[in-house]
Length: 361
Image 1 (cartoon, one colour):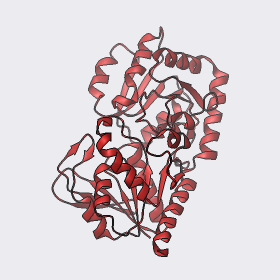
Image 2 (tube, one colour):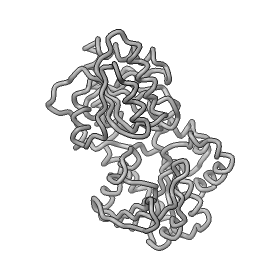
Image 3 (tube, helix red, strand yellow):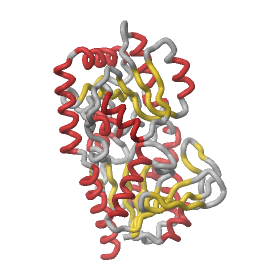
Image 4 (cartoon, rainbow, N blue to C red):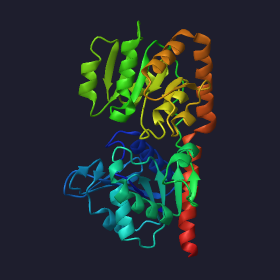
């Protein structure tokens, strides 16, 4: 099949959970014999192309971005010109959704629904009806967890909905020979919904806080550097894959303190769990606490509660037998439920089903 993936960015040109997922899925599909391209939006006025990991990346011209959404008029034209057998949209991406609604054509499409729009919720009176129409026209809509499907107002009631979780590459993220250290790890983009302010509040509230490593980068990096002064904390700026893997393998636990629904899944949880590392995460109405099971793979605390977060850190630090049990549980859950290769096969099956339906009609 000729498969076109559509999003605003893709790894390795941009780091992020969705971007890495699209890269890994595209590489997998290419190895399966499909011709794959990823349609993204650039920052200039010229279209550019690249070939990475077995698939093509087509970077469309764009006027810029407003509230993270690329302003590009080229999505519709590019989708027609590439002539795919099936298109796979990754949402939210209003620009591409509108382009498809304005020029529907006959090419079937599926959509992976990664997250509701949260920060730009004031646009929902305008965007919401368009999104609902787009989702109803999809051959299939893939939700990354049943919990998110049950709590998203845009997914509830869809009769074309499937749940296909995001997995982790178990050949890469796996336990190593390194010894565990005493530091706690935050990994991810430094964005407001990640709850980093709650994390630092928890550290400041502890009498003897353990070492803290914040691995990543993003808009809040300067703000974070100012506020970790006096704390046993350091930033590892945008670690490479090998550095991040080492951090996962040696951390006492990963902390995902996100406090908003924008955190729909938390890929870093899976990566840490696959390395046998317990997770402390928050009880958001999303897939986050479904991935990390309380008292089985880690601890789950109320979002926005620095005191509860500090107590969970102390529990992991001071209770060796519990920490070991959670480590074993994290590894087992990652290996039995979240093997990316098996889950990519499910996505491939959905793409094939969508393309086959079009041929029947």
